[in-house]
Image 1 (spheres, helix red, strand yellow):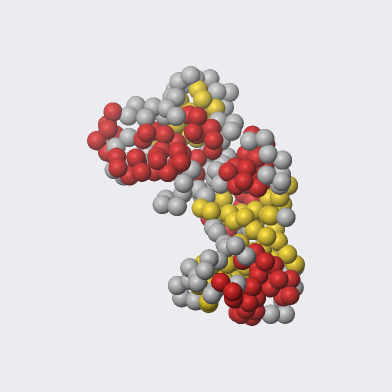
Image 2 (cartoon, one colour):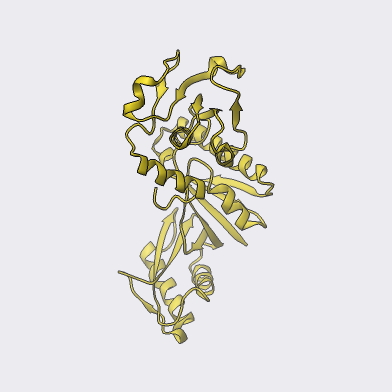
Length: 285
């Protein structure tokens, strides 16, 4: 059965109490996103990894890749961490994934105690893949291969995959409190998204492409306007504004701190990031 292996990055820099708190928020956000998309899945977390199991893997990928805090994910095949099981599984996994006369390489990494090294895995798994695809003229190339097979061994389980799907990264949504964001144009939209990526729970003032922002936060709150009664007055920690340096003097001051995430970005940079956000494509960001 396929398993989604999801990874975080920045959370790992936090001290232990903060990291555990953020991990709990991130797991809840993954579950909330899956529930909002109507996908049933089991989510577990061990050693800085989240494992998502479901009969709808494609749907899970679409959901989890929109969760702030997740840096990348991979759809994997799971097996035991025994050398013979890994070799058999990766050989079978390679069938149909290597074309005629293509080169390949194995990239292995381990976490835990095992009676072999990562180099041992690379050598033995590579041999198994080579023999399985020998009739296609497959060959090993560790420098510039046409195809890479990744093997991630976590204690007594191993996960085999051939792709990293980039995700937005950042911090889990909601771990940094509430702010209000003015979203009336592309720059305001991108500013709000960037504050969401920094872990802020954003309340939207405006209506520019809020349908897309709701894809990143299913419980997104859209206000009638700045100063509307949110019931969260004491929790509002700031206000996000999309503006350039030339527009800075026209920004109306308020009692909470102001944030300008895109103030140093050109219009072309804002347009590029806006396109990536709306396509849910983080390869170039």
